[in-house]
Image 1 (cartoon, rainbow, N blue to C red):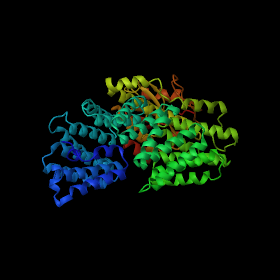
Image 2 (spheres, rainbow, N blue to C red):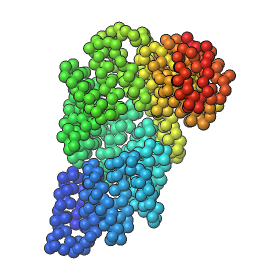
Image 3 (cartoon, rainbow, N blue to C red):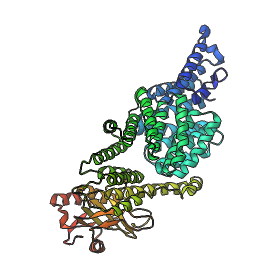
Image 4 (cartoon, rainbow, N blue to C red):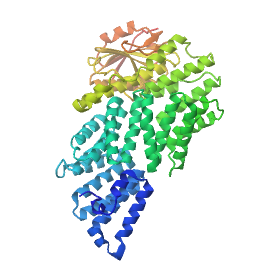
Length: 594
């Protein structure tokens, strides 16, 4: 039996949990509880007795989970699981255990993953693997793996759940939501869009407004990732409408904020201001206030006011920046740094630090955001040109090239193939998405370096496993940027201010990823700079004041594990010792690329 079967004959609770506002669901729970108590004999009500009480506990837990009251959700769902167990209702018990595990995952995030996976595996292993509870347990295991950052494992688990979900359309739609969300995160936006369109249609057919709102929100994000700005509007508007009906403040604030950002990108600052103001009001009136969405909405308000020439723009942007810093959101802090640079440039205050924001956005893999920043910088400087002391004097043509190269990140052509790979070769899709994300992160960092002060540290690196499968692309945690990748050889660069410890860490991480020792020559290019990232089809970034011929010849004569240093780097004995402690042999050479 399902958890709510014992009250389905007298209550539409299962339907209301999918489609009604929270207040209406609570009223129905109260009504059924009062009905159970008529005559003082709960055991006689609906011939259900303790199963009715367990169903009501499950209903209250499911509503609390939907509304984000996670402590309450865990309490009610675990209580319902125990009650079903006492009555021998195994399927209802296991479904309640799954929902309780999901509530703990949402409440405790990574800290709950190990225990949740163990419990979900126990549910999945008990009885027929095709039963509903086993499918739900497998689905939620995939959610835990995604929280742990193991996208490949999450994909395999979710696809396994999807294959067994055919008899359970409601669960199938939820699994499609989760898979679509995973692919949005991976940057496989074509695959995400196809799955989420299917999910939204299934939810709509079942009258599941909660599930449809989630699908529409992620569908809008997928369309934005594909650069289809106009196509993103309809699903985001649908999400906002559904969430307003459901009383879902989180989903509505999210949708309104996305719509305001979309309006800004389309040059409709007046629409953006109205949408962002509504988003902030919804987020502030929630209990407790949704501070993340208050911050993003405040930023959209500030940018809309700035575009409209409103002097109140600075206050809104300052409010957003303060909230982002308090919340410790990396994307928010990068956006706040962007806003500060824009404000200083418009106020003719120099020099302006555009680089910090661009580098943070690039390091998050958001090369399209870096392109937006570069475009905004060009527009501001064209309207009010200002000599910037101490910054590289790039000409207008070079800046246009940098912007054009950073903007080549809309993967429209790959969409149909992604859809095919979801079903035929999902592991290939995961590998492609991971490599593309790494490449876009590298592209974003290269674009950011066009804004940096002169000076680069350069490493020519040799290893037999380089030059294939994107192995030379620096990881998310690295600070390096790859500017050349050939069979057995790569060239990495860092801003000159990068500390030796960070450079050594990046090289050690590459060595670990390749599972073989490196041979590397490092040099300082005091005036070196990046003029432009490569365009599609080009083989390397456009660099200035960087001489690589002598440097690239050195790794061939080095021993495995040897790092040869340019004396201009100025790494003293203590620094060398710390690098050697990472397993490198450090030697010196008088050649340098200036």
